[in-house]
Amino acid sequence: MRAPRAGRRHLGDDGMTTAEYAVGTVAACGFGGILYKLLTSDTVVTMLKDIIERALSISF
Image (tube, rainbow, N blue to C red; front, top):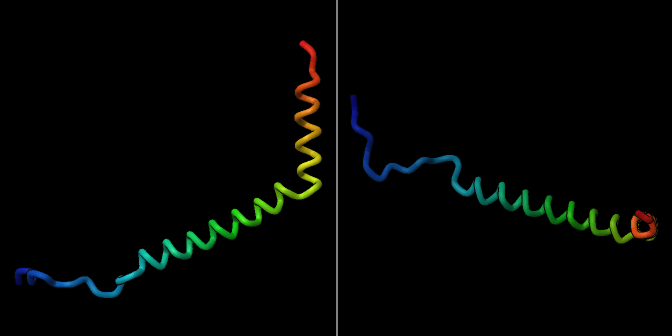
């Protein structure tokens, strides 16, 4: 049985973690952009205003 060499490098996955983080960051930014456009659209803003007005007009 041979002893492992000191300083032996693991080859094959160098930089893989960084690439995965980059892809995840780009995907999150794209999703955030789509969500922003959706939530600031006239239809959604009107719907949210109606919901808030109805909630505030309820008498207890």
